[in-house]
Length: 120
Image (cartoon, rainbow, N blue to C red; front, side, top):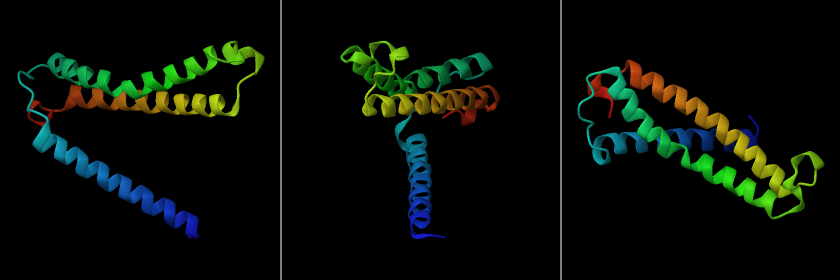
């Protein structure tokens, strides 16, 4: 492994460990246990409430790209007048959209199949 690959691997491992710790802390200490989760519809509704919260980063990213386009000559995307920042922010918005859709599919799939005791 090269030095750069080691740095990336350490960063990925520490990110994974901190996410796992954060999820454990959230589920055991912060989030209240959900009530009345007997049916799949109840569990899906519970998951969708949190999925709406998870969509906030996507909303903010799309707003940033929209505002940058509106305030510059790149308001028409077919002209190719975007500056480098708008292009990068557009790529970030695309990536955020992909991540949110995967999260949405995963969380709804888990909500439909998990027993009520594991919904927290």
